[in-house]
Length: 81
Image (cartoon, rainbow, N blue to C red):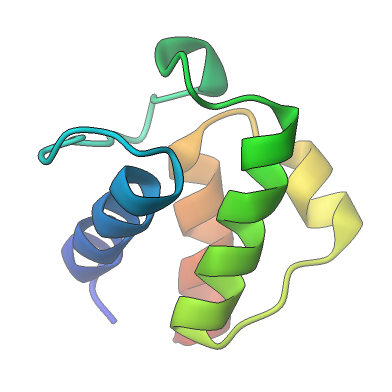
C-alpha cells in the first residue's frame, strides 16, 4: 500500500474518531498538539480504529516511540508491505 493511500485512509479515521471536519489533511509532522480533540483517550480509540481498518497490530513499544503521524505511518508501512 502506497504512503498516499495510507494517509487518505488515516484522514478518514481521524475525522471519524476525533469528529473533525472533512479534510483533516494529516502530514508527516502532525502531532497530538496540532489537533485539539486528540487527547490520551482518543489516542487509544485512534489506535484501535487504525488496527481494525488496516488489519494490523502495534506493540506498546512502537506506539510509545511515535513522535508524529509520519512515524506512525512508517510503522504501518513496514507491516503492510
